[in-house]
Structure formats: C-alpha cells, structure tokens
Image (cartoon, rainbow, N blue to C red):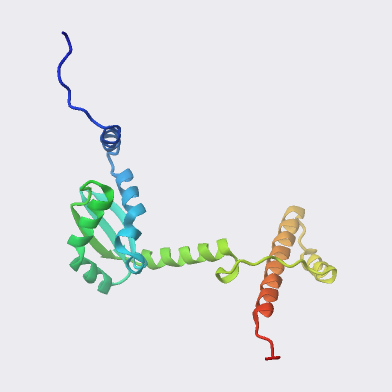
Length: 182
C-alpha cells in the first residue's frame, strides 16, 4: 500500500504550541504567558515589588523596586525559574535578571488608583445619594460661567456624580457608626 508509512502522532495541543512558537519570533506571546502566571508563581508579596519587563533570548528581565529585592530575588532565581517552567509547561526562561527600576512603584500606584476608581471611593462600593434641589441649583450656578455648552454640561454631570457619590459615602459611614445608646 502506498503512503502507509508510520507517522509520529502529535496532539492538537502540541501542534498548536509548535505553531504559536514558530509565529512568536519576538517572544511576545511567551512574555504575555509569563506575565499571566507571574503573580501565582511568586506570590502576592513578591509580585507587589516586581514587574515582568521582557523575555529576550531566554533571559527574563524583571524590574524590582529596590536593591534589597533585587538581591533577595537573585538568590531565589533557580527555584523561581523551575516554578515558571512548571507553570508554562516549557522551559522558556533560561535565566532571570532582576533590575532596580522606579517603574515598579509607578505601576503599583497606578494599579491602586485603578482599583479605587473601579470600586468607588477608598475601595468601598458606594450607592450614590441624590442631591437635593438646593444642592443641584448650587452646582448649576457653579458651572453657569462656562461658555461652551458641551463643556458646561460635562462639568455639571461630573460634579453631580462626584457629589452624589460623596453624599452616598457619607450616608454609608454615618449608618455604620455605633450608636450612643448602649
């Protein structure tokens, strides 16, 4: 029979992995995979002091926020590399380099601001409390001097939204205070 040669079988997963690695010449997909598992591999404390920067020629560059963390993580490089290989299912990282950078603290601050913004003021979910008609009129007077109508309306919406959220937070805080009648 023609064409009856035995061919090695490859699973779909292996085939896709091989295809993706051949397409990923710059290592961007691999770096994205590392970024995705980094926090789980290193844990929350280390993750809070690090930022995965890039993977180049098998060397993973990780930014850290202090020389102390750089020294500590350099001492932990081998176990971290093994855990990364285990998580990724392939040995993409041949070595780790920890570099001190201000970017880590900037990223941490940005994440905190984003988290606060997503969850309301101070990380607490706040239901906005509607403004009274007197409060609304005061806000309308405060933006009345803005000549551009679109800008005036945007300022009005933003101010009302902010005040309603603050009023809701104030109501939430006052409802959680212990009463004096113990």
